[in-house]
Image 1 (cartoon, protein in one colour):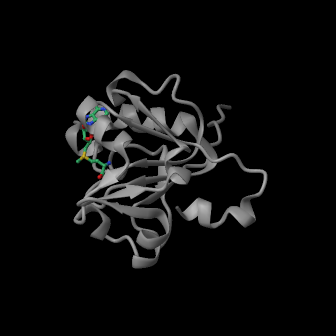
Image 2 (spheres, rainbow, N blue to C red):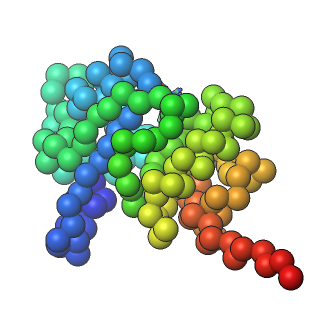
Length: 158
Ligand SMILES: C[S@@+](CC[C@H](N)C(=O)[O-])C[C@H]1O[C@@H](n2cnc3c(N)ncnc32)[C@H](O)[C@@H]1O
C-alpha cells in the first residue's frame, strides 16, 4: 500500500512482493485476499481500508492492484533462501521466535545475503538480532528495523 501510494515518486520501479510461509493453509488464506473485520482493524487506517479494500459478505477483499504484485511461495526458512531472489526490504516478523539461537543465526545470515546493502529488515517487536548475529544493526530510533552491518575491515597481520 505504502509503495503504491508513493508511485509518483517511484516511476521506473517495478514493485514485487514475495510472500512465503511453511504452511499451505496459511498460504491458501493469504492468496484468497480476504480479511476479517478483526484483521483490518489492527493498525490499518480508515483511509487505507476505504482505498484498498471492498466489502465482500463478512470479509474485506483486498484490491487486485495490490494482490497482483504479490507472489506466494511455500518456503521453509530452515532450508536456506536460495531461489527466493534479492530484496530491498525483508519483513521476517514473529517467525524467529520458533527457532533456537543457532537456527536464528543461520537464518539471519541467509537474509543478510539476499538483502541489498542499503536494505531494511523488519522483525517482530519481541525479536532482536542482539546477541544472535552481527550481520545486522538496529536502526537508531526505529524499533524493529535493522540495517545490514557495514562489512568489517579485514584484520591485518604484520
Ligand atoms: C506467528 S505467525 C507470524 C505471521 C506473520 N509474519 C505476522 O507477523 O503476522 C508465524 C508464521 O511462521 C510460519 N513458520 C513457522 N516455521 C516456519 C519455517 N521454518 N519457515 C517458514 N515459515 C515458518 C508459520 O507457518 C506461521 O504462519
